[in-house]
Amino acid sequence: MKAKEAAKSTDFETQSAESVLKWALGTYHPKIALASSFGVEDVLLIDMMVKINPAARVFSLDTGRLNQETYDCMDKVREKYGVRIEVYYPNTEAAENMVRERGLNLFYHSIENRKECCGVRKVEPLNRALKGLDAWITGLRRAQAVTRTDIKKVETDAAHGGILKINPIADWTTAQVWDYVKRNKVPYNALHDKGYPSIGCEPCTRAVKPGEDERAGRWWWELPEQKECGLHVKKATGRD
Image (tube, rainbow, N blue to C red; front, side, top):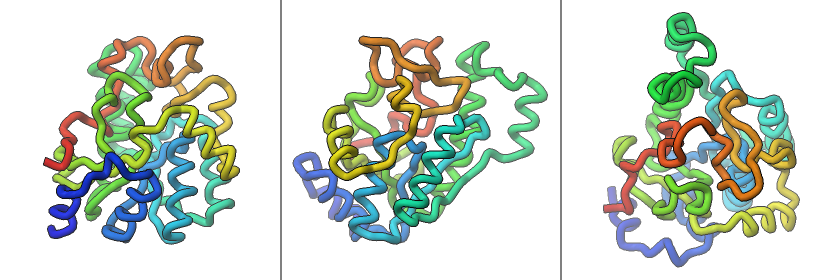
């Protein structure tokens, strides 16, 4: 694909988030979409995207275990920006079989169980969401966790067929995120005001304590280097 070859020769690390998004949407729309969990990073990207292209696509994975605050935020985003959110749910049969065999809260018992739950509720729906896309956009930032320190603004996502993965705010600090939100009056998930910097499933996410990193509240019973759900795996490379 000529667009991918052009991407390899461009230095996106020195470009602003808006510039990266303008290039990505201009090059790949409609075969590009933002993956949103309705955390603050994702919503500010929606704000940026609709200013560039009001028809920009957004999808979300509804695991069936989300907080009410997340659904409320989803509604606020629909109302403010007029975006059509493409929602993907877990395969019903797979989810039912998992719960029957392992229990509703299987993830507390082992990493293997937790990864199976994430696989059913997140990874498989993501694979469906990405089908037919040439690129996807995320709100990943290097400062979020030890598992994300080496992400690039534009990567080749080998785990998902070699499509491009666009992380426009990879180099942003938490202060930059909230400064943008306040300046642009971006709606945000009420969980952020309750000590939740990272938004996930209700039983697997808690408020963080002073001094903890931003994703310390996710699967808090596991080691930091193990705490990814499988949506963002390290097979992604810097466009090589």
